[in-house]
Length: 200
Image 1 (cartoon, rainbow, N blue to C red):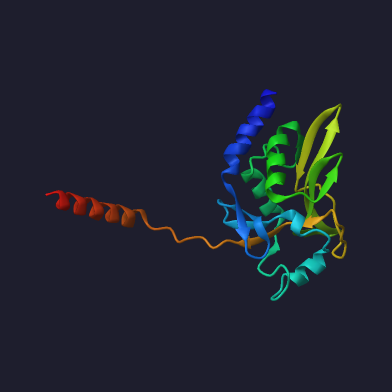
Image 2 (image 1 turned 45 degrees about the horizontal axis):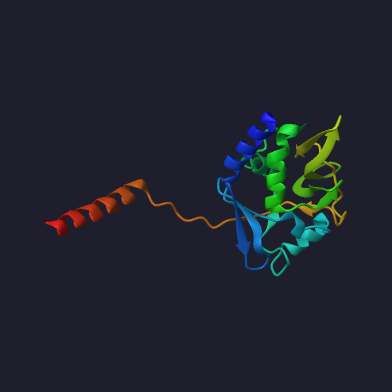
């Protein structure tokens, strides 16, 4: 129980780095902004049933997924860390709270034993096919755990598609240019001086 509570607290604090956003094309809450990396992630349930090759074609100008690209396995692993998942590339009960929170935020691709899971293709490949990154729910001796993995998930061919397999798609978010601290300090000083002069 205490392990679950620690996982939940880590998940809540880490989820602050991830922010749900609306998109004019995909709808309310369809994007997740990782405020640390500046990447916007498309909800996974919006990209199912596309092969890698079909998805790449739809990412070109005028395509359904224009402006998005495949995330690498490394970028997905970073997302998992920023989501507060304590044991990435491992099967662990400690992953439960944060894995469920990330699935709730980004949508799942399939349901197994009444539990939503994620199976999705990345843009990383190896000699046998395309890597996937998964959040897979399982039981061991009656204890529920989540396998959160970018290293040993299924490998898919470039033309394989399935209604229960999505794509890890990202877009670079437009981030505001930070105002230098000196400029903020100077502006604050001017406002303060103006207030003092007005009171005299």
